[in-house]
Length: 368
View 1 (spheres, rainbow, N blue to C red):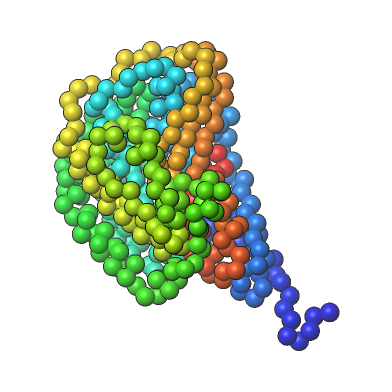
View 2: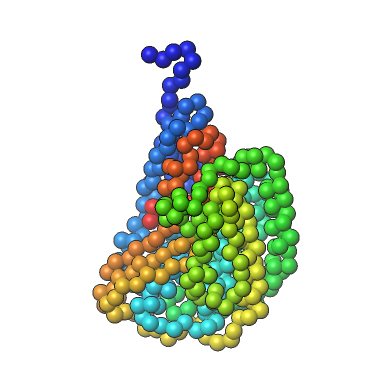
């Protein structure tokens, strides 16, 4: 029997049809008033079947499928699939193609982080900064469109290299962008990070410590915010990253504020690498000579890249035919969404919306 001062717990569905869950994600939350007592993450509402489809596609078509996974950073998904295929074929990619992969990857990283920054502000009640974030993102999408012909499903990175060199138009747009981006990032940080209300919303909330991050298999900013300095670009260099100078930003507390700071600094470092890639871009071919129909020898490989959401990996098993025998997509968002069940209990319902945004998940690669 419920007494006059007792409360009854309420079970609430958050999503899957709700914009604050950043896609068709469903949370089953048990509430005591406005406090979350327990939460269950329910995924599976956007199953794309990428891994099974990959077993029925030729190797050069895997990148097209990867574009539909993490659709905000398709360059990185395409690159992971291409690196795995190249390992099977033992193909050496031309130097210029390697540098272009890094260049376009960092362009795509800032574009992806701008979506995170803009929507994270919306999740905490800020609105104006979203429009400014779209200004930067649109400029970068113009660059990617000039090079690949697309603004989202790029299909730019292929086994052996890339489909096209950087265009004069894209280079000019990038040089113009680089003259202002550092100042703009400072302004973005002052606009959102300098807001007292925003700081009170994110400081000390949703702490992911070192042990929790490692036990959940987190990578990317979600792991680096807890003090683990792991970055695939530095620790397992690929493309041209072994020849570039950049810093790996890390946090110390592991709260939503640290995740914000780490990603803001990542954008500055990405701009730093873009400058190096433009100035140091070598001459030469952008594609190695590989057969039109790829039939790699039987074998098993794993290749990974540092996507905006963490370590994006591809596990390929070849049986000698023109299609993979097994194709597995290691999606960093899948690990990040699971940690929500650990960090949401004890927070307020409004904080849950903010914390979903803070870990930067993408449903396209969770339901792969």
